[in-house]
Image 1 (cartoon, rainbow, N blue to C red):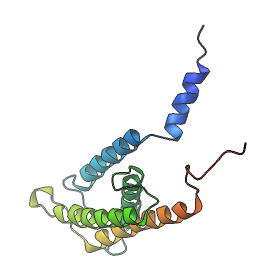
Image 2 (tube, rainbow, N blue to C red; image 1 turned 180 degrees about the horizontal axis):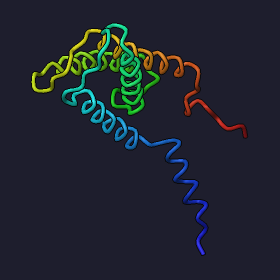
Image 3 (cartoon, rainbow, N blue to C red; image 1 turned 45 degrees about the horizontal axis):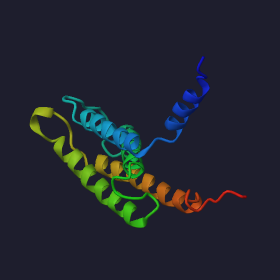
Length: 147
């Protein structure tokens, strides 16, 4: 009889430490989900625009989008400052394009500069977190086993 513990351990390891293909797939699936959610027709929430509670959702949603982009390696090695700059540029473009395209008349959505600000705040937080972690966590190449 074959021991199943090795297979379970391998699967658990792949879920805890996903490879590049899985990270890229996660980013693209989330990006599609986010684009769908932000462009779903006829969604309006009453309340003041600048201090509306949906700004928390924008911060979290675009923070996760940016974190997944950085983790996907699509813009480079997450430990490099250049990669974080590319992620910041992508964030600015997506935050503005995503909010602007909600103004397409058939969608019946509201366009808000405060939503763009919240999107940028969430993504910037993810970039700052990646920068901080990149300086605190040693690269796997730098870790040498004690022999």
